Length: 409
Image 1 (cartoon, rainbow, N blue to C red):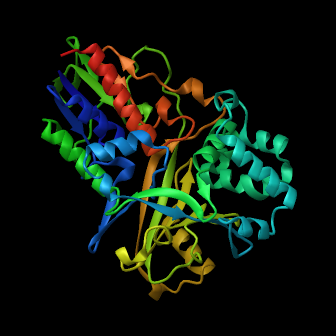
Image 2 (image 1 turned 45 degrees about the horizontal axis):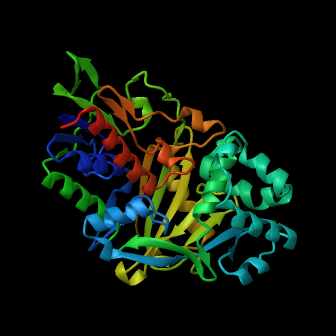
């Protein structure tokens, strides 16, 4: 079987690995290195992701993949702390004492928020698919808790589409992040960065005979003489892992109407901690970014020799000119960082970084396909109602199983 995999992100590489035994698999990746949104920068003597990443204790398929690739010994469980930036002040919100001291929620609101966190893992998210998150929070927790806590989160994550996002996404988000102790959230990271995962995954696929062709954009797959042709080469099957807009219709159910949004993420190397020890700092005050993610308040700073910060922003339309400059200028002014404190900075922009989980989203999830044309990725069912590395791994495994069923050896 000769299969073309369009896109060398996590789903594409996992599918290629599962298909490579006894088959000729070709991965076409338009960038210089595979990995998709999991690619990294190489700075001095370390690697750091272009977009912040971590894994969760419940990511069983991802954890099994790390073991299969022989890198489970690089996994470490670290503490993820959180906070809110309100009216120019950082408020840590990790420990029970910090939450009780937070002045922008009443005691009753804090109790309702705690109860929702406890209940989230047992809630039926499918029944919430058509319920707006804003409506759910206002109805069940009250308008003050929505305005003070949830509305800024939805705005920072989805911009002007925040009010369209479903309660299914919100509850799933709360549930996946509910593995907290008194000292913070338990999150996983790989020593050396997730660059190690991408590298080992690609190497394992290549050892089995897979070709990974970088700097090779894929043309639109075309049906030709009962086979599929991509870039002039003939294949038995094509697997598209890029956003559905680039996937040919197969008529096998589902649609390609999954709405996507872009991400702009600035990474900054500097000589100080700006977040007072907090890893994930949500911005309630208006800013050109929704969160300040201090990587070295999560992973020990000694491994890098400098502090690393991400400024995270999502967008639904074209970015305005000079957006990166505006991000950096706001950050320096807001956190009183002089130019001399910044060692380097760079902006990563991905126009179609992930789905927008609007109400009714589930009906737009495409099937994996059949008849030689397949699709899988962040838009697949395992990444509903929240995308993750775990969901992308599962999608790669499942679509590879579908292809093997239809093209038995």
